[in-house]
Image (cartoon, rainbow, N blue to C red; front, side, top):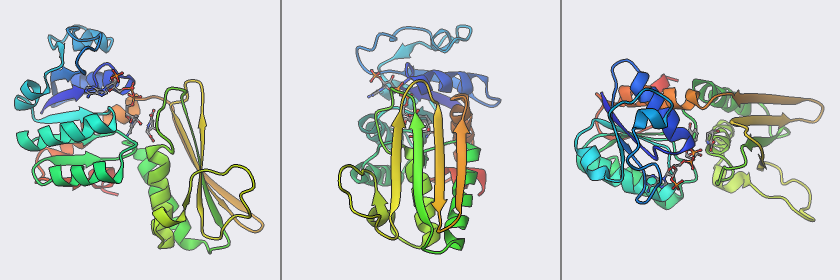
Amino acid sequence: MRLVVVGAGGRMGRMLIRAAAQAEGCTLTGAIEREGADVLGQDAGVLAGLQPLGVPVTDDPLAAFAATDGVLDFTAPAATVFYAELAAQARIVHVVGTTGLSEDDLAKLRAAAYHARIVRSGNMSLGVNLVAELVRRVAASLGADFDIEILEMHHRHKVDAPSGTALLLGEAAAAGRGVDLAEARVSTRDGHTGARRPGDIGFATLRGGSVVGDHSVIFAGPSERITISHHAEDRALFASGAVKAALWAYPKPPGLYGMTDVLGL
Ligand SMILES: NC(=O)C1=CN([C@@H]2O[C@H](COP(=O)(O)OP(=O)(O)OC[C@H]3O[C@@H](n4cnc5c(N)ncnc54)[C@H](OP(=O)(O)O)[C@@H]3O)[C@@H](O)[C@H]2O)C=CC1
Ligand SMILES: O=C(O)C1=N[C@H](C(=O)O)C[C@H](O)C1
């Protein structure tokens, strides 16, 4: 499968180049950055710490998308919406790891998925998707006297909150409880907040240092507390999940898929 990495110069972009270049059955055919980026013209392999691959970083997604089978995209919401439209025109696979997408952005991805095969997840790791399934089951088993709180910590450069993973885990908890996350969600507490509203699903965000991604879901009951945690130790984890998603989606019909489809969970 031929693959293009967009956002090639980013923290995940470089990991994705390595994963696409090294995965069996894949060839890296393009690496894209935005106009004016200082990595333009560099060899993608060298950028990712590998031997030269003969693939220069360019700002021409149209040419790259016309000569590939799939795109790995961990960039920013506006860029991802733009790339989804191009992937739909080219009828290719679009793997979306970008987080912080709005409802409007998601609607545009759903429209693009009439023609593209899109796999989107706030977290491409097997571990987090297993944890989400566990959270759904625990939430379904426990009564309303267990309060659900989700805590996440990421590196100091992260720009969106709560993380895509925290929201994915919140959706799982809400699904287990049979409630709508949009109604139960509380993402900020400051000042005189009043007592906790029964049924709320709370989110707390920490940012600092180089933390790759830590998440805990806490079920706090009247006299006991259950905590389910996941700690990501290396971004290569997400990149290999993204390549796995691309290979999985390659023979599939157009549609919007998730990592649970890819992993068969
Ligand atoms: N789903 C998952 O498993 C994971 C998701 N993520 C998500 O991936 C995204 C990226 O994370 P990270 O790599 O740390 O962030 P970075 O900021 O390091 O990388 C993003 C890259 O995308 C580039 N970019 C932005 N807009 C465009 C554009 N229009 N065309 C081409 N390139 C563009 C940025 O360029 P510039 O710097 O010039 O803006 C940058 O190089 C985030 O949303 C993050 O939450 C991260 C890890 C795992
Ligand atoms: O920005 C990151 O770094 C990460 N983003 C994803 C998220 O928002 O959950 C996944 C991972 O935790 C790292």
